[in-house]
Amino acid sequence: MIKKFRNKSMLIAAAAAILMCGCGDGKAGNDGDAETLNAIENISVQEEVSQEENMPDQEEDAAQGDVPAQENISTENGQETEEGETAPEDSIVWDDPTGEGIQTIHGNIRKLEAGSFAIEQAMTGTLEDGGGDIMVMASTGYEGEDALVTVKYSDDTEFIVSTTTDGGITSTKREGSSGELEMDSLLEITGSWEGEIFLADKISIFISK
Image (cartoon, rainbow, N blue to C red; front, side, top):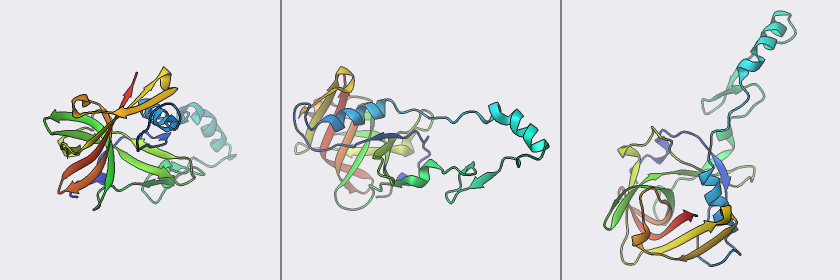
């Protein structure tokens, strides 16, 4: 696959969730769907307490010789963190859905045509500490043609609709159709690559009500 999945300029806004696949009905066994959809919808950038709030005290202490001036430590991946902290990416093992064979990709529909659509592909990974899986979506301003992945489907493609209601408390799955694809729909797509085109065997559509 020629797409450079790992080289996209993405705003890191990770949310812990359990990625789901397969089908079934009812609340039982579908809590993962609700957790995933809620996590994705509530993705936000978590900011540390502003360093500026503590700067006066730090400067005063440094002047008195009590503490050393603040020092930044460069991590292996080039990010800088305060001494004693670890960059979030250090604990993430990113998926690489660009290989041969059956792969799974995620994203939101940005273009929709008969028999195909294009998604803004998300990055997915697993937390090394066992905290679960994460999904990182492209932020507004980083979207572009070079970040879109074209997906084609056929009459043999299976469509599943996963719906969460009651604020994510209840989750159900049912058989769907291509007619339920809409702009900005969040999808999980299983299939394989044919060059830069992703051929879908199964498409899961996530809906929140």
